Amino acid sequence: MMPAGLNRVLLTVGGAVVAIVLAMMISSVAILAAGADPLSAFGAFFDFGETPNSMVNGIATVINRAVPLFIAGLAVAVGFRMNLFNIGVEGQYRIAAICAAYVGATFSAPAPIQIAVIIVVAAAVGGLYALIPALMKVGRGVNEVISTIMLNYIAINLAAFLLRGPFQGPRPEGQLTVQTADIPQSGWFPNFNFLFTMFGLPAPRGAGLWGFLGVAVVLGILLWVVLERTRFGFDVKASGLNSIAALASGVKPKKMIISAMVLSGAIAGLIGLPEILGRTHNYGTSFTAGLGFLGIAVALLGRNKPVGIAIAALLFGFLDRAQGPLQFADVPPSVIMIMQGTIVLLVVIANEVTSRMALRQEERRAARELATTNRVEVAA
Image (tube, rainbow, N blue to C red; front, top):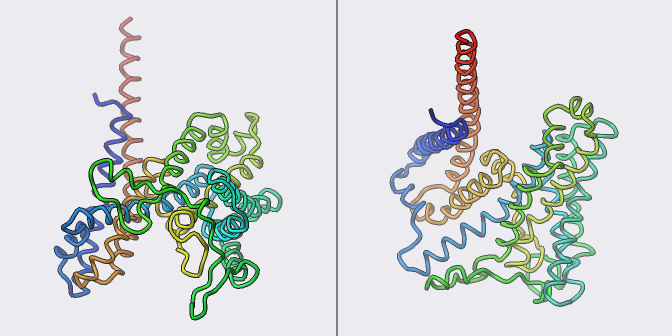
């Protein structure tokens, strides 16, 4: 008899594989409708070039794209664990990113202090901005979905105002884009190019492999420990499952709502730092947007588990990197969006199906054990 835990894992993995295969089939229809060859399109996904340099650059691009998505997925997952839908991750990381970039550009200190201050500012701003919908929910019963969506618009437009107003940095003549002042070099996060060179591969071009990857890995481990191995994590999960039962057992659901939302916002505040500290060294009009909304899909795809979120983030990074090769294969970039949407939708459906199958198998196993126990007692 296969152990229940292993059986659940196999069901989950099998469901995800089936969902991805179905998503590829649906995407093939979209590719055919666009007048392109599906085989050529899928071949472009795995086209990392013919030279070691191009291969290394492609891998670095996938990981660099996955790092902020992984952090975004973690931020959303904290809210989901509490049965809260923090749709405001987008606004939280945008306002946190511009504040952190501005503060980081106003002083110069030794690298560890400079980088630490920038990270703390980003986390503090994100957490404080998430505190607003938390207080609205526990104080007035305002649904967090509505409040965080509205706060997204405020944060995005406030960031735009600050960027073109008090936070605007020097603007060279003829430059169309606007950005904050550059962070001093002491605030630049070291890259992780050594992960390639230690195996005899060339270093990626440009900014290379963002060093914030290390922070993301540590963050994922710490969050797993906090949510799975501490009293706080148990209280969060218990409050999310049944607030009345949690209250009866001594847990304060309102306190847990505030704690979970602030923690989610603090993590969300770090989403923009890989780009700011690793590539641009400022916040500008070309800053990457939409990562907070993608984080929702990544968290759902990863089933709110750090390992699953990491895999989902790498998948999304892999799909995003393929936009360039797809254009050379005469495939519209919109196919990427279709694939992302269908994968998330089908994986969510597959998760529900496999969860019900696992529950049904567990019920049957429990029934067999109970019947066996009863027969033994009767025979005795």
